[in-house]
Length: 206
Image (cartoon, rainbow, N blue to C red; front, side, top):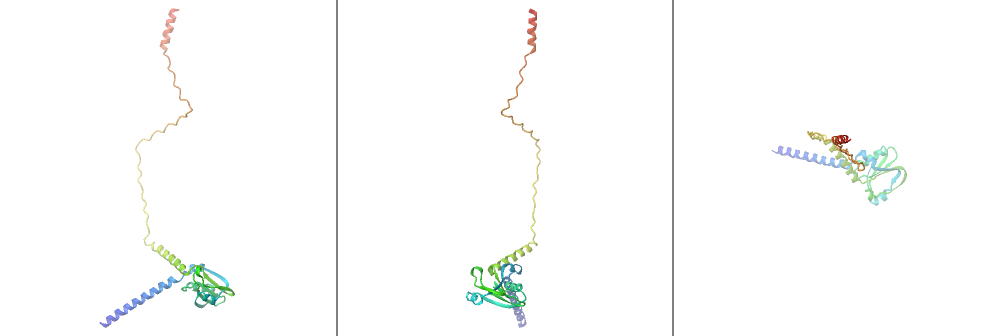
């Protein structure tokens, strides 16, 4: 009996651990920006370095530092790091990649100064907005893929045409011009028999 309880407890614990891992994976993937669109969202300027102390006094947060081989790897690392919206890369190979959270553009809390050996990249929109845009785009792609399972069929209805059995009507007569006089009617001719009768009477009296 105790063995059965132990198995049930072990199974429940395994299910709970899997659920926690799944939740962590979902949260982590939601916090990572889409690498394909992330690079275009950064304004990268060469010969710029962050003014660390002043920026932290204004509320900026230092996140982490890692040696990478190129500036694009530093940018990708910022895209994959939660809350990162600013990176500073030391231009050498390998170079140090510093990640910061400076806040959204409307409440930016970092300052920079000129420096020949560093490049700085700033996310041009808030990190939260970028995450929402990526999530919306991914959901759109998922809906497009899911729509293939249930393709929409469009049915076309044809209306039967009925032919009329009535004879065709004659074309209407052309309208008469208002200035054109009506056609003249022929005058009735006098009867020729009466004229011949008068000629006969005159011939008898002659």
